[in-house]
Image 1: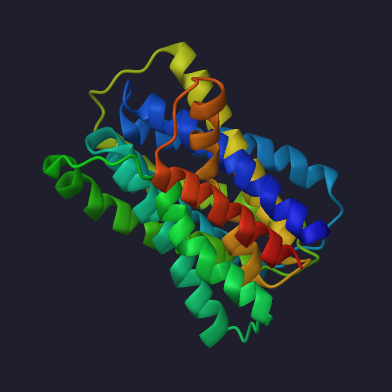
Image 2: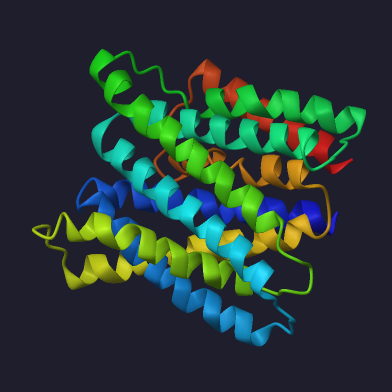
Length: 276
């Protein structure tokens, strides 16, 4: 149960970070938001890592660095997709791909063997992620401009989750730190090519805070993988698209369409099944 709560905490934190990051990327250059977010995540993760007893190896740091490369690529493409296309297209495509690939790798290569109920939860969760984020957008331009970035983002997200889960249980949070360093290095050239973009001090602070939340989400996910199978931790952590929908429903008093209601019910059922 502890692993389940950690993974769900990761999903909740990631959901808030992605919601805020997506909105900010429409006002500020997506590359700058992604880079500043990783810098903020680096600062937070170093502070947490220093407070957690650990024995880290170069192998652990290597897995963390590979995870960070996936993070950098995933966030850059995700924010670019959100700045160009419909959120209702970009978010579900990136989320579903980011779940499906780690599940396949976990079962085929890592030897994970979910229970029958967990398999049902996984099968339910994948379409639920799509439905909960879908708002019925039919604008062809949004679909064409958003899908390629979303697919590339999903591959980066998959690498992020799979690589981070390979770090040893005694490594503490240092693999997350290594990942943030790698993500900064991966994103720096992208930002350098877009040097003309300007960003205010307030937006710098907000982007860094968003990145800190994302780093916290990854730390919770890492801890979750030490309590349960990677495929289960990935699926639960990937329920983050629920957060923007719930935010809109509660804070903005938005009305949900039938597909979103079905997605929320599916996500709830998947959570219960994966927790058993």
